[in-house]
Image (cartoon, rainbow, N blue to C red; front, side, top):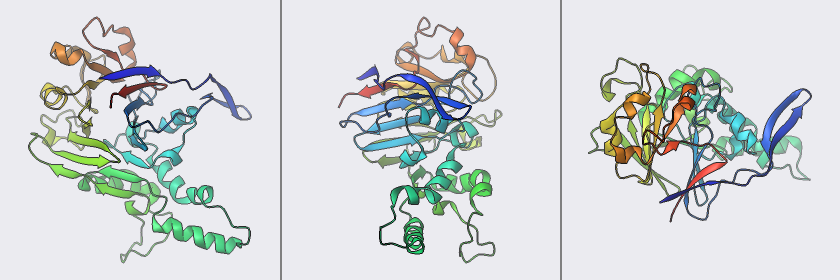
Length: 330
């Protein structure tokens, strides 16, 4: 079973970060460890273009491991409210290539390669600046500061070629035994190719990340003409520790929800309040079996979802973002 709780992070108050520039901030940093329990945290619960909610990116914490799931364009702003930055990200899993899920990945890559060395390696009192630069650059090139990035092998190349290459490949001249001498994804991330598994009816991969079992599966998200998942561009949902089902961005696919979510304690499902497009329509979700809806929180919400009384329709509710967290029994 799980417990919904609201963490005491002190007051949420305006914070002046520069003359004429302000933000909101909690007094205490959002903790990224637990006593061994599984904790689920939403940094937002909104759809890509919501004007009322932050983007639906998550943190899964278990013991000393904090796994970030997606890193959208607005997510680092929300992280800052909790005293977090990209330097807190040691493990990252990406579900697909839309900007509300990968828009801040370039920031993560650049700051960890070029800023982390000065934050984490202090210059020795007897160390000259050239010696200091030589030492820290060697550590940077060794991969010491690279976050671990979890995704299927083929998607690593797609992500790089179609989304990240333009902003990252030309920061340095590196010797790659090729005609262009470009950098590649491995200069910025410790890429972990997830293990493909069979027997689930759709492509699926599994990885144990610091004691957190993650199984991802492909979804029918884009394009809107794709009738089956094999015709769709790469996008995934997941099951966490066999306890939490996350639909990922997807059109209504009741067979996938039942196949992967039926035995989970908590289900999270993508939802919009209008038909069409590439997300699940609320009226479609209402047709799911009552036992699934009773343990389902809706997320990736269009703004109009606030006009729906989802509890009256049999759902557990709407996913609540941090400082609300969902803690699971050991």
